[in-house]
Amino acid sequence: PHFSPRFFVTTIGVVASVFGLLGMVCYNRFAKGWKYRSLLVAASLAYMAVNCLSAVVFTRLNLRLNIPDGVFMIASSAMQSVISQMSWMPLTVMLAQLCPDGLESTMYALLAGSLNLGMAVSNYAGAFALHELGVRPTGAEGEGAQFDNLWVAALISAVGPCVPLLLVGLLIPDAYQ
Image (cartoon, rainbow, N blue to C red; front, side, top):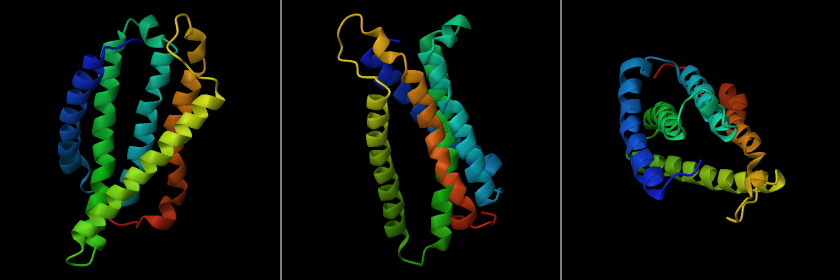
């Protein structure tokens, strides 16, 4: 799909921000009483499922289901924002509870820094995966074949964040928030 920069930056950006706030409301209303492990596992699996929806767009299945690209992308962006916020909130709550008095801002900075490092590593890993899958568009006319394996990359990027779930039992306390 070809989206205008205005749609991609403004429309999807506003939707993501609004639904990020909705994610905080949902966390406070529905997930506050969950155990840390349960919430992180459920949020990670839900995020994986929503990210798999990118493959639907890349294979053009959404058009066969009569769902326009713009509507599909806005809906999936909204769901991603809600789920992202619901998985971010318990991490900040847990760090706030585990942190010694007076070091809250340092711990929050470490959490944000870890998130930024993870994003940087995932960007480089994604670029490597795209290269290895032959997804190397140059912007030239008629290069649609360059995107044939993009759906595979989308599935890899959806499943990748679930790998750390193998360590949840070791690293995350089995306690209520």
